[in-house]
Image 1 (cartoon, one colour):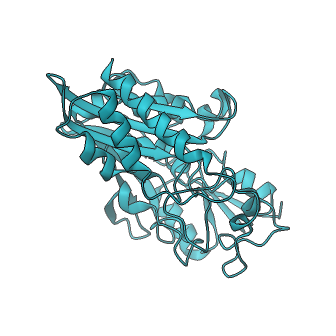
Image 2 (image 1 turned 45 degrees about the vertical axis):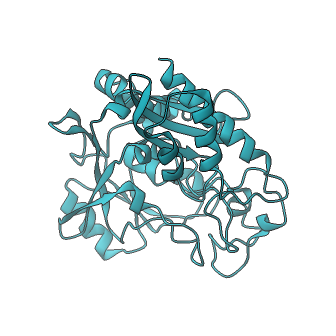
Length: 328
């Protein structure tokens, strides 16, 4: 780990002013991801700006849904009674992540900005287009068993965002509130926040220099109330998803009136599936429908030498999640 300076920001303007004077600085919240990167010499910020005193907190029921402050901790949100009852998939995505100790530290905003767990990215001994553009992607022909099968490119096949929360937020049309160095705020739908690798895999999201995630807004909906998050991993705790599914269904009289489907662990970003939702909407809530939706969700998958198993795994995960909601 390299030497760095530390400053504590009392207000958002203080934080952005410090960032403006030192553009390579980074914001420090829970630091559960940042310190990992610094210890591995994958991040070497000259200045850490502590934003834990900023008032970006609160878990609020609004007229239209839910507002979560970006500085709220994962456990606090996951265990909140309103989140549990009205957005169960969001609650489950948080409580299935990491460990209780880390969830007590990790902030919502920081969780959304996690970097990939790709071994090639994490090991400076290997080239990596995400870490150093133009050097190559060893995973294309190397160990790719846990890499993405949707949304990849010849520049990068890693699953860029390794977490769970963004998958659930994507399923339910969440919006991120971002604030820049001038105090101006903008709303970015989460489906526009993450970027596919293309030819620029080092650009993972649309957050601009100095911008802060202030809050997350999730609209209320019947399919959000009747939802689940299913995570399949190599061990039952403290492991990242090989495949996951956040699904919500509004079923009336045995017919699906609205559906939301997002997948994790298989995409170059959290992966929403309009194709699966189209199959589900207006169809009977049956096993045959669920299998058809799962097939549609993975139709464009491009597995590599060691990760073809993810096609079946993701399909089975999605079918099981849909059954869980339909039978609840």
